[in-house]
Length: 76
Image (cartoon, rainbow, N blue to C red; front, top):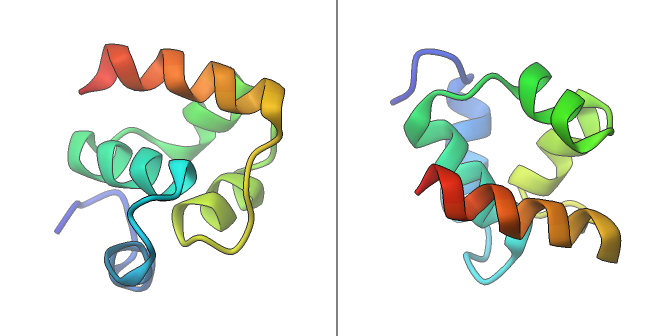
């Protein structure tokens, strides 16, 4: 388990559909222990929005998807 994320977020992320871009982002960020506040600032959204993506509760907009895909290529 990652030190920077609550057990609840980690478990919800694990049980979410991995085909969702936000869930993929969550898995990479949890694995790399990237702070949600840093990620939210980079993407121009709130921390709550990022958490919602991580657990599959919402999906990023098209413009944000492009930013996420670029970010994922640097984090893997």
